[in-house]
Length: 527
Image (cartoon, rainbow, N blue to C red; front, side, top):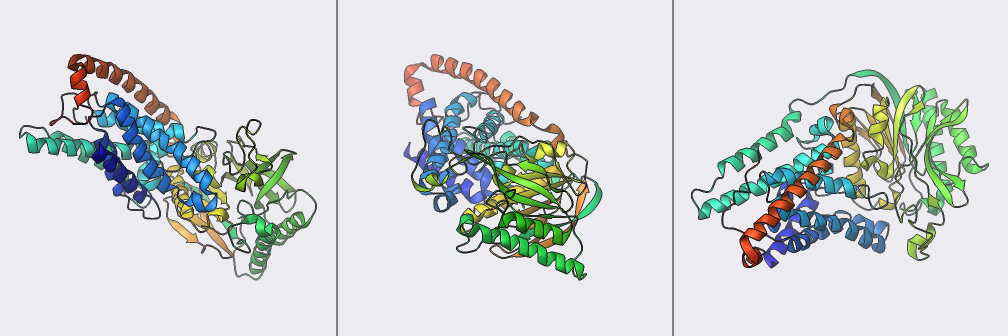
């Protein structure tokens, strides 16, 4: 059992290394394979324990950036909650392994687990989905065909097919007649499907173009606290926009169709009279085109809104997008009427942030723009619905100041690039002092600014109206894998019970720790 726990821990560490900042993507299927191999032959309870160890090692290391940015207490609590899902998945493995082609069913169950934990409890936590590690690999273009959920499934299937091949090869050493060629063919076949879009990417034809200016104003002081000098943050963005306007007037830069400011470019309600409102008006009047302002807006005495607001030079503030997924214990306190913490950084959350529900694009200078604010970019219910509603361009407004000294910034930027590929759209991302950039529809970073600097990007971006297969599929992959998982669990439970009844108590007990020397007939290869 100790060896299994060690193998699970190694698998979790390898999976972490597949993501930023290490970003050695080929370790991903190896880490997933370790998960399956560590659980091979175990009963339900011990499978749950080994799966939990995998989840603990993976998730605590994957979001270690939360410890120094949000707080150790939040890091411990959130990582523990997310690690439990890998333990719960482990409970299903003995059932699913009773089925022919078990790598297929286990990959569906893994994908379903990711879907559930990405939205529950509260607003969930999508960080760590297998698809998010695929940027800059031959598998990245597959996301335009099958979406994030489908890509996670194929990556999980690759790992489990690898595990099946390893089992067959180990069985061959003990028994010359052990089948291994079919598992090898299955693993190669899955890998071939995964990387095929690298040769035949899905291209959405452009129907127009626009020039967008993206402002990174920087955060005064230590750089990791928006509130340290929130008026200075707004002033930095105002000054950068006014300077851009001067360059445009002098013919040094092209006039943009609109300007994008980041999340928290104003940390107080911009509609209230005062320095912030005056500054925004000054900037918009100077540039003479709409500015999409990132602002915290008062909702009522107990609530605020995190919004992207289209501020027009002629008509003033207009169209708005409200952040869909405020961060629990970061931007609101769940169940505050039951538990209202008054310690540490939690005491600073005096008002809860309400969630937005908009699924249609904003209109900015005649362009249909799909917006997302910070962590929204990691959720499947934010940008994709807006694209299906006609969005021609994607924008992401983010602060990242709290994470400026961590690897969270690179992880989020990788997710953002994958969203561009998935939607077949150009994407502009504005950060207060993190990763500001312009991303082409194929995920290429066309331009970017150095973190913790003040600067403006002005780039010609493509506009498109066509839909990738991923956008047409929408939520159906998640629904399909959920149904497949439920059906497989029922079938596996029947097979598991029959096997235990046939084997008898003594045989069932001995199988908890010692795997069978050769694959059983119920462990047929993929296909």
